[in-house]
Length: 500
Image (tube, rainbow, N blue to C red; front, top):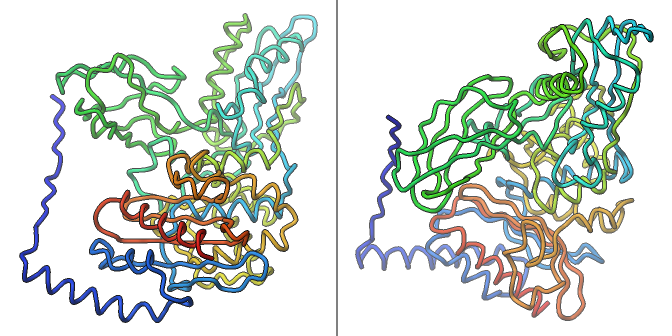
């Protein structure tokens, strides 16, 4: 029997006396805080701060003139808070400036050992060498990659190989073997948005689990995995309930088992739960092994990886084919439009690989901080645990974010590519359902950030008077609904557009 118990959530309503006392307390808070603002009284911001749901919240806000760099509006702009995905603005900016918009990643396929051209016998191995491509086989770039796996098989067959006295090996040594940053939550790591970084990543390191559900909460049937090679032991503690998906996969990198928890909607013939592939390099080795066998090539050994072999590839490898990624500017556009954690984490490790000769998250963060310091962007309030913002232990202040955006506009070599990577408010990507008021139309391009009790926005905007502004705002630890917080932030920016 599968059992899922939802913890009870209790709400206590204050009495009138407590309510009046709270209002008096809020009036004191507003009186104390408003002098901190570097602008004349702003009604939308006053209302936002005075909301009871903001009583214990922290806010860091900075708005700058994009032409002069002068402060237009600031409130605790030096206070470091958890930024969520707004941190991707930092990672993507540094990656563009240091690697260049045309930078690309390469994945190669070849073989080691001796190939008898007459018999077609390869006494050696098929080697698939990863080169850190974050987007290999991604649905976002289906036109670019096409059916790359079939092309690999076709190119291998063209060499005359008919039998392999060896196996298919993925060389996944390009980065370190720590796919997930240490400060990520356990809840996130097994799900698609918490996919780890590997020397060879594929399909956004995401697979699908298909379910059929009925109105009976105990009746959940797993009908398949895509790709099928991702099927492994998952203990099901999930139920079917309601209409909102709240299902989670708990599995760690390189694991071969895990469990399902939470709930998925009832009465679904084909509900898809997306999870993170626990070993993408091994997955590729298995798929190529299967496809070669289906093409008539006999293989004696089992597919594997250099990590599992615990030794690097030292033999000479004859290259058969190579797959090149889209240019970095295209990858970053998808990264910021759709807030892809995996791409940000790949770029962090790539910075470490290229400039520190160490494909680790820690080395990449060092490069990012050095870049900021070199360009006089204060980072003493920057605490980075990853490149994507998924860790709740990341922290940055709104002034640092605004200063980075100002640097990119005034001094960045690739501002055009950077700016185009930000979605237009109310129209694209993660901002499609935000800033829908007509006043924002074609006036705001920004990155959003969200996690539990965190909402943040940062980007560029143009006022009705034609003034170009840069804004950054981070809110932590509010109570109540995120929708109400976002509405308050929208009102602040709306008032700025209308009156600045």
